[in-house]
Length: 494
Image 1: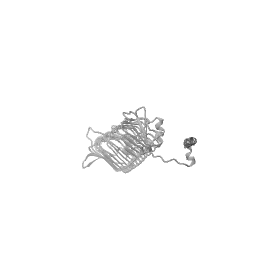
Image 2: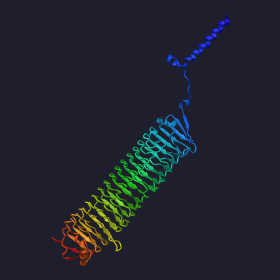
Image 3: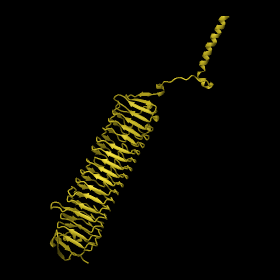
Image 4: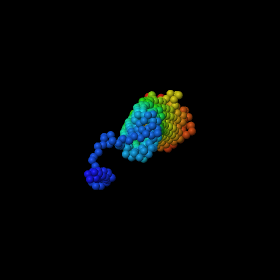
């Protein structure tokens, strides 16, 4: 009997325990909670590491993704195990062992949430479009190992506001930072020798740029459309359209090392009021400062040999242009200072051999034009319409060495009273003084015979068509003034 009772108790105990176990997943429904289980700190951290075929290790820690490895030659984030986690990644750290970041590694949809990137010194290259379109990216630190940033590497990163370049960066590709609208400051070290086309174009909030002295290859329109850029300092030549339409640019410091200012470099920089040009500059290109309507004065460096077409045209506030009397300028280009309506005086150095058509046309405030006497071997030619519409000019002297003045050279200079012509003059263009209705004195530094020879040449006889002086048979009278020997005073009709 006792044995039977004991057996029954054991049976109930065993099956009772089994029954409790069978209802484990239903405990929550019955309201019964299990005892809390202690979780270690390392388990809670939940670090996940994935190894790719390239040897690249990818580690996730909450919103941080860390890349590392041993002699990894490229970083490609194509593996689904990685891309499906990128939506939560805010910081990317690329550490030792990674040599290069491949083209389009993190571009567009794959990196929309990334806010911060740290690139270690082991990385030497950032590929084309590597982080293109990462619209949440705010900050980048580029290690000292990076020498090359590829085309469009960070283009369209619209929230990027801070970037620190490493000391050994050499080359930046086309449109690498185009459209990075939040970027405010750029400093490029002395090792950077190549900046390609449109590199920082349309960075609308960029305010300050400093460029080192090693640039040898510079693309076009690098900073075009940077509408809030205020100050630039460069020690390298300024390529075509480099700062075109940077409407807020106020100061430009072109330091030692700048040799050429190319076509349209500062065109349309309407707030530009001050430019410092280093003495090494040799060429000021077409439309270099076109329509810089706030520019007030400019000092042309001694080494400049040519001021090209429309270089300063439309600079309506420009009142002072200083050219060194011992400078190297040979050519003042077509319309170089056209419509500089505030310009009052111009002194043409003896080095100038050609003033091209309309160079000073429409300079309505210009009243003083002087030029240095040339020796016999150094002639000077003024092409058509050079001073047309300069209504402020009352007297002009073409000095010895001037051989030809073009058609309509002083057309419409309605207040012109006195003209002094040199013995060296060989030709005066048709209607050279057309519309100069107030001419009262013409002086010629030669004799009567030489004067008759001059006016008998083709077109010279019609030089005064439309002016008050029309009768070429007037009496020529010898007139003597101090320092003006053998000058003929020509009478006038009327």
